[in-house]
Length: 173
Image (cartoon, rainbow, N blue to C red):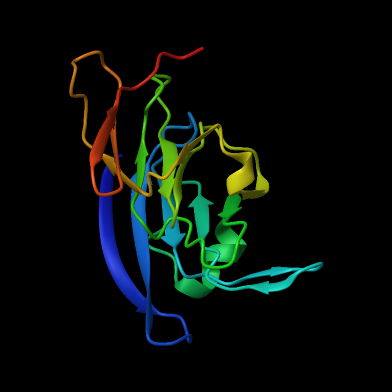
């Protein structure tokens, strides 16, 4: 990713949800894009009702005219990714936005309460869930970008749960 910044902002729930903003390139237009994760975001499902703390990630494509207000995330997002379950906290347990397959686009990797999920960019427009991930890493909930550890030109990941596991970036298919 180009740059990341962690901040806390009020959401009207019980105190503060952690909002993480990461900048990178999710498409090939040359503009910097913004990925915003809100781990404790509630989701409404017509069949199930409110799914508490499912988590939501917003992908806002550039060009950006400054940082958007929290109230603008839904309106500006090209793609949203929601957790599927109560208290999944998708994106709330570590996240990164880095090119893991060497195609020049940054790929969202989102940690959740029990799994991590990898989504290859470019992402389709609209609403996705963790079920739409290109890869799922069970029992590894914390995702971190550690750069290119083995010098092959692709970003590598560390996924953790009590222990760190290194996943080397994969070539473009």
